[in-house]
Length: 301
Image 1: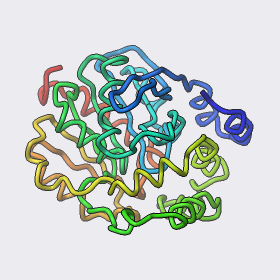
Image 2 (image 1 turned 180 degrees about the vertical axis):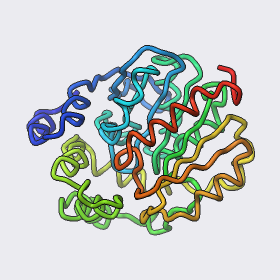
Image 3 (image 1 turned 90 degrees about the vertical axis):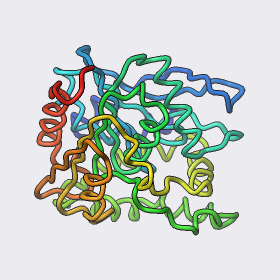
Image 4 (image 1 turned 120 degrees about the horizontal axis):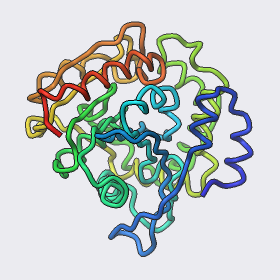
């Protein structure tokens, strides 16, 4: 459930898309093998038409990342946005492991409980790496895969494994600093005017959640997501890769690599766009995604 601190800070939201999405956040308890108690998982679901689209956010982010994209999709699809284990507003329990493996298991249990049919899985940045990992392990749950300026081809820095106290605490306090987060936000956009006060509020709301720093340290120490280059050929689902031409977070080299390594993959470049096409060019990104979802010749649902 959303804490009073989160609710109070959310009063600073100003854009209608941010306010509307925040007000639609729900929670459901998800049972997993690695926890003795269910994990209250935050999500939003809008629309009814099938197949469902599921949106996965990036590192140290939340489902609010899809505030501009989601409204363009809901007339044609049932759209889910959820917070991955250890991120967003999903409950963080102090005693469990936070790693790509537990993120994958938690996502699968959420899918079993709430969705229960093949989905169009969309991952942005780190969420793309999560989507790739999930698709490889649970192919029956994924009809199509969409990668938005995705992680999954770059090995994580080794320093993450050495975040022992007080280094871990200091690292997360650095990320908590709003000036630091504003600088990261500005780098993520081609047009830096998108890095507004509302965007900063969206990017910082989940910092008020209990155990935010502990979960982030634990995930980083796990090594995070490495490179899937050696197994991408095993993805059999149709894939769409959307990439901002001016991505200064991951650069542009991974985009053609994904196109080459995933057998059935189409690459689309978005002009005047940085690392977050779903925020900076939301309507264009949505139109490409919808065209891909309706291309039944590529995959029968």
